[in-house]
Structure formats: C-alpha cells, structure tokens
Length: 325
Image 1: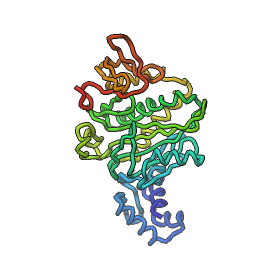
Image 2: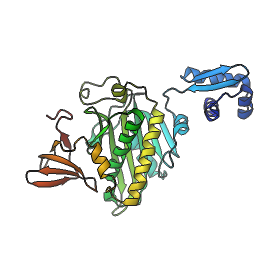
Image 3: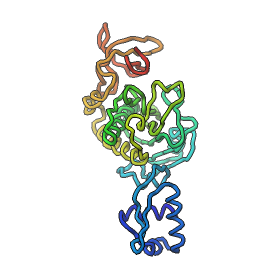
Image 4: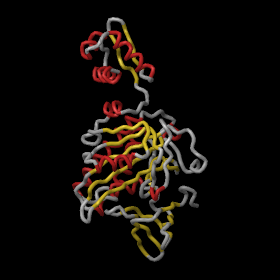
C-alpha cells in the first residue's frame, strides 16, 4: 500500500485528493490515511490540505527496490533491480544471478554488505545507510581481454556523476579508485566469467562512501565520504541513477569503438597520477617512474630512466596519495 501511494503522489507531482487515491488503489480513505502516516514515519514529507488532498514535498534518503525503480532514468541498466537490506557482497550476488541466467543490465544493490570486496581480496567497509554498494551484470560480446577496460569506464562514470551532482573535484587513481582531496571515496571491482575466447558475463561492482562521518582507525587517514567533502546531504537513489546513466553513455561508446581511444584525453584529465612520481608494486619487479596517462587499452604509461613502460597489472602507489611520500 505504501509503495502504491508513494508512486501515485510522485507521478502526480501536485495535490492528489484522498478520493482519487481511494478509487485508483481500490481501498478506503482510512487505508489511504494509514498509508500516508507510515510514509511520514519513514521520513517522507507529505502535506495534507483539506479539499485538495495530499502532496509529496520531500523524499528522505531511503533505499529499497521501489525507491530505486522510481528514481532510475536509465535506458537499460536496472530494468531488473535486486535489492538486499543485507547481503554478503553485491558482486557475489550478481555472479549467482548471472549463473541463473539473469539478463544484461541487471542491477544488484545492498543496504549493507557483510563481505564487501576490494581488489586482491581486500575487504570493503560497508556500514548500513552510510554508503552505496551496487553491482551491474553485463553480457558483452567483445573479447575477454577487453573486459578489464570496463573498470576505466566505471571510473569515468563515477567521477562525472560526483562532479556534476556535487561540484566536487573528483579524480581517478588508476586503476580503480575515485579520490576526493587525496582520499579514497569510491572503489571499483570488475570480475568476469569467460570461456577460451568469449565472455560469459562481467560484473562491475561500485562502492561509494556517502554519509560516513568517521572511519575505522586503519583507514581513517586514507578514506573520506561525499558528506565530509561536500557538506551536503546525499539522496543515494538519485546518485545511483546518475552513476549508471553516465556508465551507459561511456559503455555504449566503448562497445562501438572497441577500445579507449576516445576516452584517453578525458580520463587523463581526471587522473590524479598524471605526471606524478609513482611506484609500481609488482612482486616480481617493482619499479618507479612518472605516470603519463593511459593508452587505448587502459594500461598506465610510466616513464622510467630506461624508457616507457606500459603497466597492465600490479598496484600503483602515488606520491602524496595514500601515504606514499
């Protein structure tokens, strides 16, 4: 009942009479009144005026399947939304759905993760109501070796969304972190299932620190949130919509061009590593140099004393970022 009333109020965008709601939903005036009261208890601001009816004035930062469906204005991502109040990891759930035959563009979102993952098996702090934890399932028709470039696409999408919505100077730390004022606000994890020469599916997971006011001691020096840096309250469903609309734009261009040549200039403009001293923490052969940006396959181009070296794997520690000085 609550979701139906909320949907009716949103679609009207003005006052809706109690009688109109009764007729539309096939319930009594008392049932409508009770539904409105429950919505108010959840934080929705609904104005009631005699002889005019009800009007939705403001929505709280609530995440659930209905709220996501109401705010998603994407073309194909999120046509199926799977929402969990609590789950182990949205990437894990997306992979399970993929194995069951879920369609391209299926979106998995969680209110809280108990086993959030970062690169190289690291955990991702996932407190309830403070962050965005989401994964999109993709079934691309390009070669498996191109799948890692989707991390680049996702990084561009998050960066543009943060810059557009909050006027924050979001930057990218190659390959998968989004940075605000030299601290991490977002991590991206791309995983895939392949056969010899074909992709079964790819899942792209994005975790964003949204409303966190403080962090655990071990990450407090390297992590931040949108609220800390902007001072603005964030409506998570709106931000989720903004990220995936940007992702659709970049993804469709990438699928048409089959490489990152059309994104290099924009990406390098956001790259916090650009023209900075970096150290490549390759267990077999660590080395240092100056990052000069990415190439059309998403490799980081590093200028060393011995010449130019493209980096496709390994971790990059950047001077002045994450404690590397």
